[in-house]
Length: 141
Image 1 (cartoon, rainbow, N blue to C red):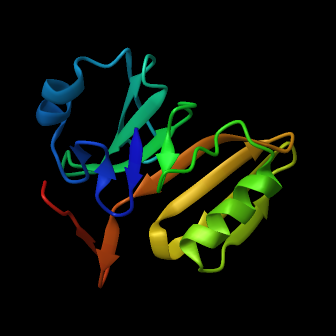
Image 2 (cartoon, rainbow, N blue to C red):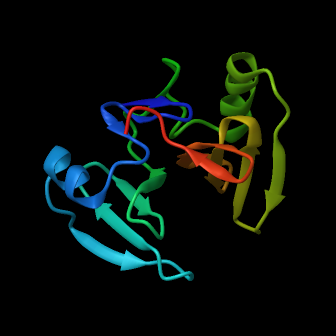
C-alpha cells in the first residue's frame, strides 16, 4: 500500500465517488460521520478509513496499516523521532507539531500529510488531495 501525495493510495484516487470506492475495495465494515456530517467509510482489513466530502468524493484517508509505505518507507510502528527523521529526508519541507497529551501530530502541509503517534510510536498516517485557491485538485478521479 503506497501513499501517493495528492493522488491517493495505490489505485484508490482522491475524487472518486463512494460507488467507485466500493467497486474497488468492497463494502465497508462501518459507515460513520464526522463532526461536520461527512461520511467516513471504515475498512477493518485495510485498517483504513476513507473520508468523503460534501459532494461524495474521496478527499482524506486515515490509515493504520503496518504495510503502508511513503515513497518506499514504512513508518507505522517506528519510534516517532526515527520516522520523522526518515520523512524529513524524503519530504524536505518543514512540519508542524501539535501535542494532544498521549497523542502527537506531525503535519507536512505542502504534502497534505499528517503523522500521528501515541506514546512515542507512529500509529496512523493521514493524507489528502492537494488544493488550489481553496478548490480541491482531484487527479485522475
